[in-house]
Length: 69
Image (cartoon, rainbow, N blue to C red; front, side, top):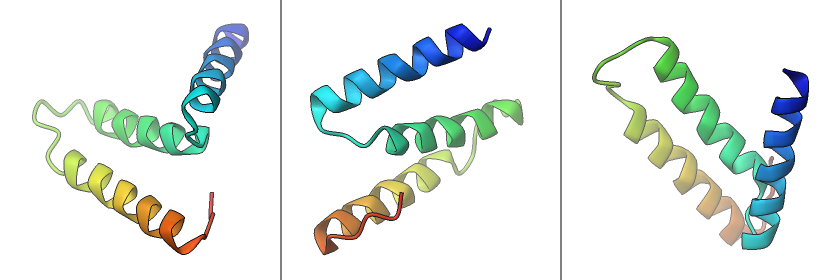
């Protein structure tokens, strides 16, 4: 199981590097999605707002030259 997780992370890093994206950004988005999936919510109320807030924060930080991840 650990190998699969590591293989997935390696692939994520490879794809992110290819497209100039910090892998931590996608890890955080995956974490948000998993939190909502774990709640087994049919309507996942609030997920889009949380994702939007994260992305807006990242854009503001990038524009300001801040890297908190």
